[in-house]
Length: 120
Image (tube, rainbow, N blue to C red; front, top):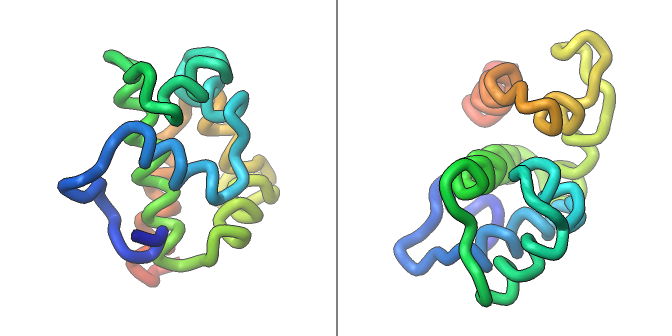
């Protein structure tokens, strides 16, 4: 299943699969760890299927996955990475990834929803 094929985890989804899909857009284990509040090594363990995220880390992983999936409806994986890393007028010249790293997800959710619906 590719980025543009689903906006939600499929029935056969696993945390390893979510990490794999997010990594396809160029986020590193370390960045994904920062986004989820754990170390990069822990994210590697999720990817290997040797552990699972819990509580807040799980919720943040699913949130990041949602953002990546919605952007995948509009862009190829490379475009998703560019969008996340590029300065954006919507965020007053800040990068969406910066906002995510700071835990400010709502403006990114809103922008991604507008993009996916064709409103932006």
